[in-house]
Length: 251
Image (cartoon, rainbow, N blue to C red):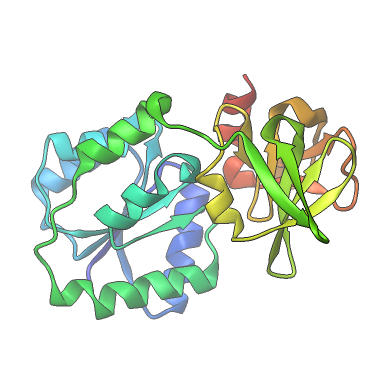
């Protein structure tokens, strides 16, 4: 299998390469920008599989394919889960949310081996995915959640939610009245329902609401610690891979 990684953060690219190596998958090349990738594709045989970051240092990686036509399989590695999960799933082998989980990576590689090799002529619609990424204006986001409390149903406005979090394979929301409520579905599903202007996934466990942030503190290994208005049951740390996007989100 001929594998290429396109990722602008070199530590993240090296980490992904090590994870793939542990699965017996050898990475043949790592590229870090749109410009570099265009030149590489024009001069080299295209790989079997590409691990593709969406936001590169010099633009969206989709710009690469405006200059070169490829038939490689693609697995997205992205922090843009709040925009286009459905598009990723329909138009790629799989998507991996940063920071990449080892089990999810192995499942994505196995999916490629088991499915794509049998259907190598899948055409990816980059234009549709790009529109979802850069123009989410027309999307309708969830304004309220209905929670079952005993025999009663409680309506909670999205504006009253400080954060969503996962714990012991369950998903919860925490309100600004300092209450926790159990939700149906996974954290990934919740992300598809929320307005990315107001909510951000800071790590694999937490989604925070911008108006609920009380303080932001520098933390070890170039990470950030988030203090919310009422939630204090666990530390909320912005993972290193998401610090850049988080700073752009709060700007």
